View 1 (cartoon, rainbow, N blue to C red):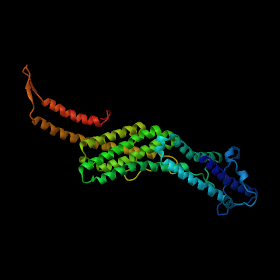
View 2 (tube, helix red, strand yellow):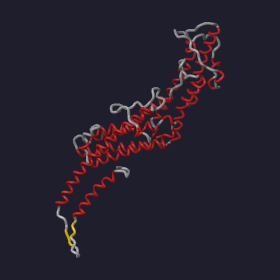
View 3 (cartoon, rainbow, N blue to C red):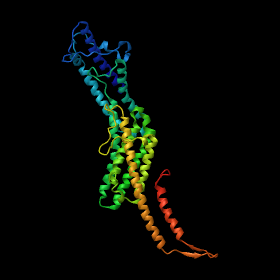
View 4 (cartoon, helix red, strand yellow):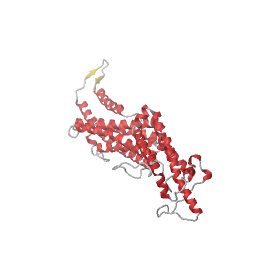
Length: 390
């Protein structure tokens, strides 16, 4: 349907350009000036008939015989056709946007359908590029009609859906926490934080899914992996900052030791995932901060991702979270040291079993108790952190 529709758009775009060019040529031959029914000077097309393709060289047969002498009459003549075709384009756009909103599900269950959906978007962009090749300018630069800009709409929708996907996950977490009274109950507050971390882990794991299963359904210049990674970084970093009391980590002392360790583990996983996908991101120094609002990841015409802004915002989140990592790690080590000292005092103050071997050697359980204590602490760390963790 998109291919047939774009052929109609090409037909009408060419009709307008060709008919107005013919008017200009006839008036030029007669030595006259035409104001096109308005105060504007006549607009000349840069058509090079020698380079025109058959697809974009059909306007001669479209000019009705007699009567049409200015631009306004051309517009009136084409009006009803244009109205019908572009209204159809709006209907197709709505259906494509609905499919784009289900991109994750399509990538999992029907990747061929997702590829077809993207191709339906790209036929409009291809038509515009072909027109520009033939005429030396985009449709609409010297006339009223331009091709339906499907990619801009689709990419903008994709960006919104990606961010909403993350926000929806956390919205459910916040609703459950509110119902359980996380503000007043310590156990509910701990579960709230753990739920936030689980949501962060889930979204981070989907970076690999987008990279391996989803991005292949899109042209490379859609930069899908960068778009999703940046959305995950922005949404998750904001949630983490809210949980720990901002970049200074004022609420870190309220977290349990295991919660601190889980936070350190998630940030290390996130950083590893991001730097594996974008190897040079760790060297990038961000130019601005993105605390208050989401980064504007699309270029001005919405046709492509602004890679400079995307890399900058991703680097900011990556570096900022690493500062949070160090704060959480220091709090964990401080808390672990205090706890270990307390446990050691209890161990040394306790009564230990004593025995004597047949050779007269004295044996006590103190050493075993001390090493058992160290083993508990190390086991807790090993269970939650990756082997690459420092």
